[in-house]
Image 1: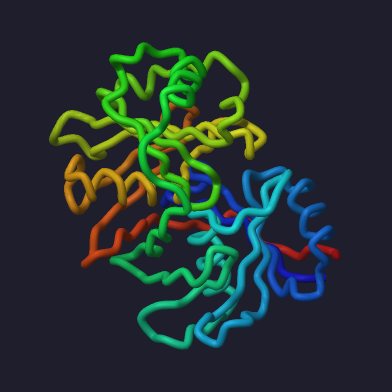
Image 2 (image 1 turned 90 degrees about the vertical axis):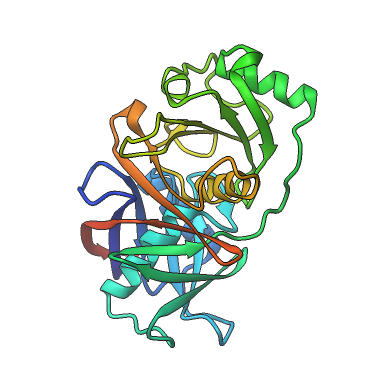
Length: 277
């Protein structure tokens, strides 16, 4: 038996964020056993806490969707850090902790009352070619003039990101297909009018999660922050809303600190128990 925690991420109220299942003390589980557990939980991600192999890290994390393993994902990073700390984990540094995962070492800090992680470098950036953009526009069911810009924003899951004219257009999206096609993950963002609680609305569509639309997505928001702040389309600190279209109230806090983009959110424990494996 081993400890099990389910954490709701990017919310301060249970059931309105994005849940992640966290299995503790998983060193003796095989990759197949981890994959089987991830399919069983049927959440967008299930993570496994292991002893680090890098002396700089406080713990090692493996991240699985119901169908594949990911090198990095955002809400599992924050949820797993929450679960590790709640279970009595003691970081080497009093002000931060370091997660080792497939993408390397990821620093995590507390910012106000929230956990935050440093956005990892992109695996692929740059312009989206015309053929891919045509496929994405057809998938989303929108006109080309609704797209302000498009960029590859892949930090692991394969994101292609579109900046749309406004948040209302983002909320009105009704994709015309059940998956993003040969592109595995499509993220869209649009600005709200000034003065509202959130500055942007974000939606994420991916074949990697059972429900196709991901409720709140740390990796996508990390890449969007790098892109939009880097091109001065967004201020150095902003709030992104996500999940509105599917009944969630996710809030992602994006902040530039020096040359780094940090992604923060509230985390709430929803389930604790034991896994009998």
